[in-house]
Length: 127
Image (cartoon, rainbow, N blue to C red):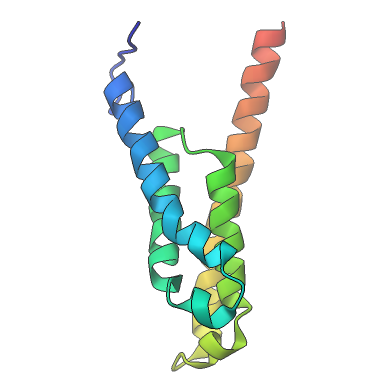
């Protein structure tokens, strides 16, 4: 049985597309998280950071990105922020760190929103 509503993301087709996008965007994020050395992981930082922000935008609009994906994005960005060699390669490391901190903050806010919304739904179903 399909789902259809008036919103841009209120259909099964849209849900499938969001799921595929989430899976694709997780790849560079997971690379950054899984590689042991900062040097190896740093090759994937730009893609992981862009993917993290794309997940944020999709989550804000579709409300269907998983907590695990947002948590992974935060973990990857935190790793970037703590890579002293990579951070020192920026012309202004302090501004790069501040920008990444802002990204982490926005993702953290979205993660809180997802958790509160899921809790609200669970409470509604338990009545």
